[in-house]
Length: 128
Image (tube, rainbow, N blue to C red; front, side, top):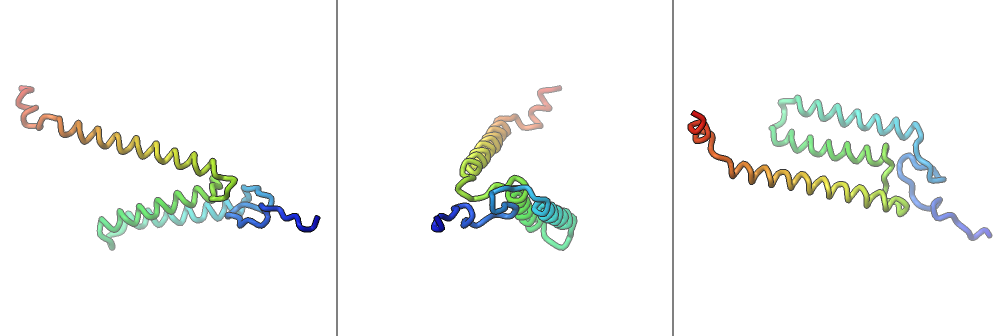
């Protein structure tokens, strides 16, 4: 009987997950909140600065936004790469694919519609 080992106890745990697999301790939420506030403050500071070029500000804001999403996924939604969370990861991946399709499809439709519009000077001459 001593050879039996619980597979969950030996597996590495993610932030906020205890040995029993439970989540939701206040310390985890406090760390997540601290990181989220730090990233939000950094984004506001970066957006308001004149020390960087506009292109580098946009790139920095994109990096901070991705970091913010990762913090929320790990500390608040408790989505990890553990085998038990495979369905959560697949559902999240499907959600991203659907959102990506909707955004790209909308941009294509708006681009096509813009190309088919009449130039403004011709449109204004027809209105008179």
